[in-house]
Amino acid sequence: MTAAPVPVLLVHGGAGVIRHGTDAAREREVRAALAAALRAGQARLLAGDPALDAVTAAVTVLEDSPYFNAGRGAVFTHDGVNELDAAIMDGATLRAGAVAGVRQVRNPLQLARAVMERSPHVLLAGAGAEAFARAQGIERVTPDYFHTEDRWRELQDALRQGAHGARVDHFGTVGAVALDAAGQLAAATSTGGMTGKRWGRIGDSPLIGAGTYANAACAMSGTGWGEFYIRTAAAHAVCMRVALLQQPVPAAADAVINHEIPALGGSGGAIVLGADGSFALPFNTDGMYRGCATGGAAPRVAIWPGEDFA
Ligand code: ASP
Image 1 (cartoon, helix red, strand yellow):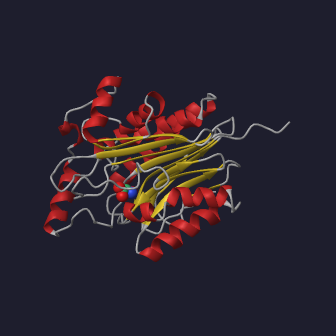
Image 2: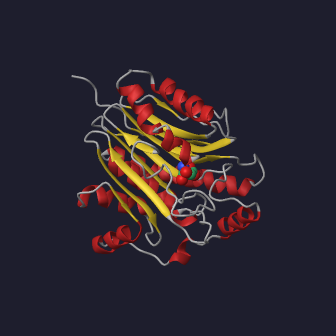
Image 3: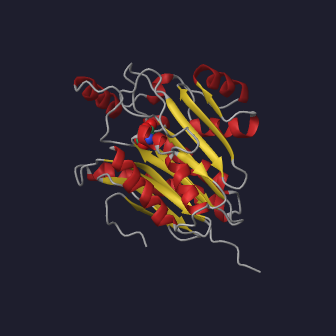
């Protein structure tokens, strides 16, 4: 008899250029939010709940924080509104659910999960997704819930610089991947997209295989310049390297995130977890908000390159 796997949970709160040491109080708050997300997901795993529940719990905490570009802290579009995207995937069954461009759903990941579990579809967008949320009794909020001063200022800066949803120096998307005690994997990602995005732009996060993917061997949630994650089918590429080519998780993640994507001109990071509990948190930006909880051990969080994670 083989021993039950030790549950593992990884989270990220985005990769991006974050000036080291410029705001110590904010950095403390961000670290506390990452740790709270890890504790919420870890509690589910330790209770024997499926990986899907752990990633849902962790991402919900991050969506409720104003510090990340998802849920409450979502960035603004060019037109000054918030359009949110999210996806979830179950590695054991390849079931998936996603939403794009929702404006009044407090926790888009919960709506993505409802799409997976309570609809025959995988991806719902815009007004239809809002109608589905209403029909399913998913919590809705007025658009001002998503108005934070920091994000509003970011939009004004972007508009002054003439950006059109292609600002590439800050990524605050959130995500989680988990391995449960039954050895099953799940991945989830939630985002406001990119500051100043227009024309109904949808990034990689809600696209299964781009920003979010899980199979029996591997789960990934990405953060970065979404167009490049879509073009490389990044999350699917990493997981197929692990599943079919039997590459170690760190090598598979490094090949796609740190080589394929930068070779095209993109940047970002990811959290990747294997069914054997091995994991990697690669990024090629100045930092990535990230964290890990293994078994019942205290969660560990990191932001800067070189922060010890072992
Ligand atoms: N990947 C997200 C997008 O392109 C942005 C991010 O990671 O913050 O929509």
